[in-house]
Length: 192
Image 1 (spheres, rainbow, N blue to C red):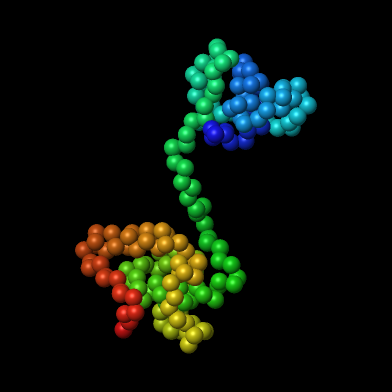
Image 2 (image 1 turned 90 degrees about the vertical axis):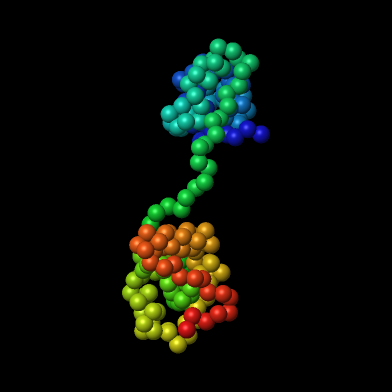
């Protein structure tokens, strides 16, 4: 099965209005039935939908449309996206209420096992504040008697990929500054 364009009905509306493609060609490109495309062209379906330009949005090339307009037996193909990996949006990291009490444990784990991470990196990684990090580090946190260092990945506060990327960035920063990169602790080894 071929990939479908984004917003298939809106794409079909644009192709009907702007090209001389057959209903069958448009239907196969958009993953629709030819009768549905004909209903869109007749104004029976999708009256309020604004056309979505697949050429401007890099889903098909204009020369491919012209080639298919000249020969009704040819079919349009959706262009593959260059970067299918979706990155997390920038901004504050939301932590569910049920996991917020786990955050100091995760901070203690990161401070103990990854001392090379800067406070801004920990803030970004765990969605916490510099004040909370300082209180956990200085044992001034209101719940410091009950804080036990636990892995933030296991707690679900960050992904292993994010943690590895932060540690790698911190190690590169230390190398650039000419400082020694700390050796990771073995499992069961105490930092003190």
